[in-house]
Image 1 (cartoon, one colour):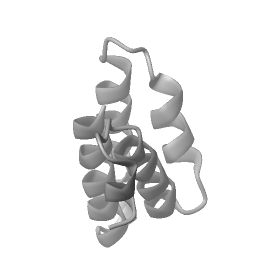
Image 2 (cartoon, one colour):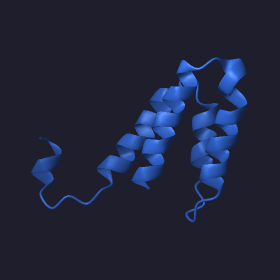
Image 3 (cartoon, one colour):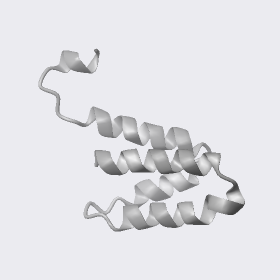
Length: 80
């Protein structure tokens, strides 16, 4: 869902800006908890983001796909 993708991107940016000693384990636990606990069973998304060499870009890509998956009444509106 879009809400989860936005949360994942924000949480990933926060993790990147934090010290690894301070936030790495809580970040991984939070991502796994959110993506394991959803009804769509998208735990592979959380694991893929955690394992990505550039987590922020991977989360941004996931957010971008979620945005482009929204229904748009006028396809020209995507360009604007």
